[in-house]
Image 1 (cartoon, rainbow, N blue to C red):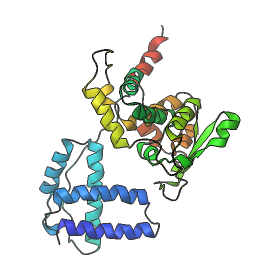
Image 2: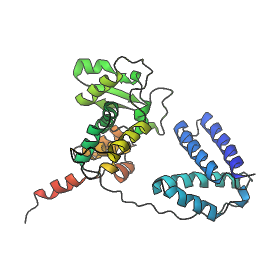
Image 3: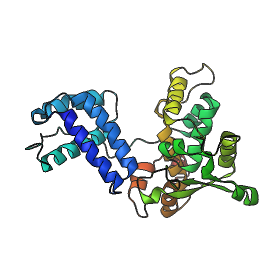
Length: 293
């Protein structure tokens, strides 16, 4: 059995787990995408001939274009596949894995000026989608799965507020039950929603894909206009950072349990502060502005 065959058998097993509701469909989809990457890179090796050196060379190639945390996630899937192969008798022992260090401390957010510059220099449909994430805290995959029917419009007409539903449709899977939630929209977010959703069918997607937004940001950053001047940090802005910008703004004004509810994190989850609440250069300046002796 080679690695490609092992990956195929493992994927079939995971499909059965999804049907039995033992694995979330979104988890399976993420793993299936990683399996394709593993198959392209390592699939030609015999399963019992896979060595640490093979994994190490693949890891090194991936690190040329991917963040360490992404590569570590892919290695974890490979480790899970090989452990399963040992349990099922397809492999006597899995090879040792190379060590991959991922920093525990993430970089500060770019300045607000960098975010605003990006919003001003990408096409309107992408700017609306990125700003919507900044105002709601939605993750990129949640945003691109939104459909027109996910909005409750009567509340906006009666009270000036509106809500969208995350994970309530049968075809809108969520990884954890806490991610299934209503998300309130403020006036600006509601305006963006109606501009993007107006006149579309109930099952139509409201916003562009995350891949399209990422390409739009890269085009703007790689080909900036001469005027106005591009602020530092624009090259670090990504669709995922919009959610972190939201988390950091809310965390400075509201208790943590409110932020966790808005972001779909389980109560008391350490994920919120560990990975999402980050400071910016501007917040640092504000913090020391009034310090005196």
